[in-house]
Image (tube, rainbow, N blue to C red):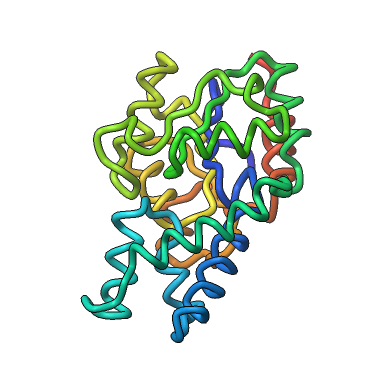
Length: 223
């Protein structure tokens, strides 16, 4: 299936799409919950994927109850996460290759993430990728978080393009909802979450990895 329109820019999510970080977040949270004498089921973590911290905290509060020390869970799990992250988070397959293609074609590229800027710069900088993106929009730098379309509308404005001219790549349900709600061509590359009927309806394609997305872009005549 060809892309429905010429792509004039590509916007990437970060966690779970560029970086294999969601599994590290999950393991840190599960370990911390165990240290606190309780259990964080996988289905609860999956409800957190694609949220900023306030959204994740709401999921945790709903599961554990108001008396649970969510702040302590966050603090300790962040410590455990950075024990791994400081050694370097693995890149998802196909990241370098798709960036090479976009650079060769002169197509703008950006990151729209629910993570904070310091985290985005740390994680991407560890792979020397910061200068491979025109800009990063991080948590707090747009009016409302995903699944609101605001992050992607802000990216389109900064790119100087109509949202329909931009390809958005996401791995989470909330990210897909945000990108599609902004009117962007949206492809889901699943990581922790399986595509649902809703995702199939919102996306122009569900791709197995970024190599598949790169193939779609290669098939598009250079602009």
